[in-house]
Length: 308
Image (cartoon, rainbow, N blue to C red):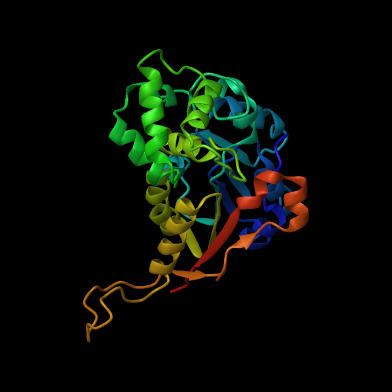
């Protein structure tokens, strides 16, 4: 079952005009979008974007009674193009939930879960050319180690990468649970961790397959440019790499000058575009985490477009 994280907190920040224009860049199962529908009036224009066509069609069926909801298949890295095609030049609020959809995690055929046996896929958009299988079975040791260390922040990246390369010399690694077993066997004796031993490696592969960090970096300036003065950008992240990108971008765009501190006169010409509304990220309450374990690592950051 799809349960949107930080729902009430997000909507409190996002909705400033009940008749406004709002974009959910990662509509997924439509949990947040349904909340936006319920907190806005029929005159509002609500756009939902998702790169997974299968999930989008399920959400389209659920939203069929709402004439003001427009659903579009696409990657949010193309936000400006998508809205231009809808003749929308400015919006009141943008939401980006960077988590993997529960539908994707629960369908073993999609290959996202390290608990369910399925093909090594991990594509959020099934039309992408590269699967996790290609990385695991074709990439050289050095590249595997690099992404597992960088995107998974895995301390045993070298051991895991070597384990993968050694295992595939005998036969290809075709399924999620086959990969999990390779990861387990690559860990040092007596290894213990609170989270699943494959979690970080799966995260790294998923990020690389879907180019997630590149997409996030590309959408941020587009989102800010599209916001009306006073409009808000809400971003929910689930790991430190995403959160750091958002935090640093918000900090940069809330400053008037980016010149080195010792430089006496500003020469960069940069002007602040944002006011950060969440000095610290909003995190899920203990009650929400108890009811939805996926919420335990979620962080919400919000910024508002300045009025000039």
